[in-house]
Image 1 (cartoon, rainbow, N blue to C red):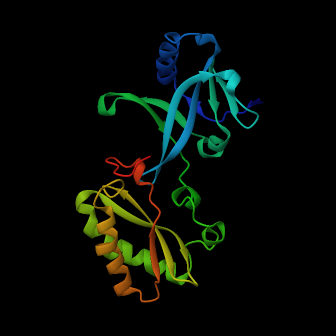
Image 2: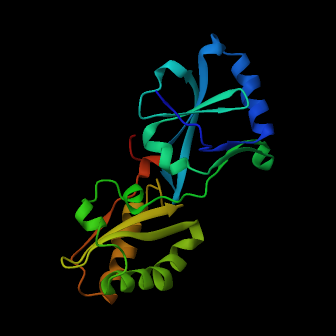
Image 3: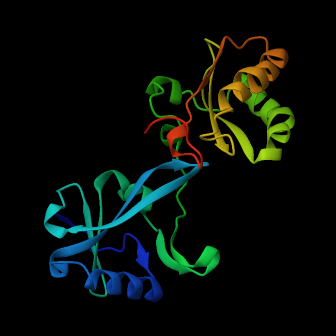
Length: 214
């Protein structure tokens, strides 16, 4: 088990009190820790799972942090994504625990399954910049009425293949396929003739109204 002595993340006093009270009602509470992990990306931001689980279940890759008597475990894949984050209590939307995280999803987070060599091309090439310009000037204003947004997350410039992630109202929406094929794709192809394929890499199962099975 990896014991992290330096502060990985912070837990405010209000948040700690809420967690400790909840933990006290759990069976075998002395053996449990608060586990915090990044479960995916929603609307371009990290989404989290918080749950109680035995400290003994932590593996060598996991980070174990003690915050004034509260033991927090961060699974290995989430360690770098939660570095410098803060768990706090918010009074918004009825009140609850929220993560304040300075880290943003990487292209690999936003586009799981996209080959590493394509991600490595980045988004600074001339074709990528033209795609971003069209998205910002023509596509996103037109789908903003229902809270939607489309972002370029990867591009194979030599092949002309674009990988898009849909967020907001387009993530998980049953009409997202039509929005992509009849709206976004048409606009991009009309303005950028070099494009050969436009691929939706959105995790629609994580949307507000998902129609894909998890």
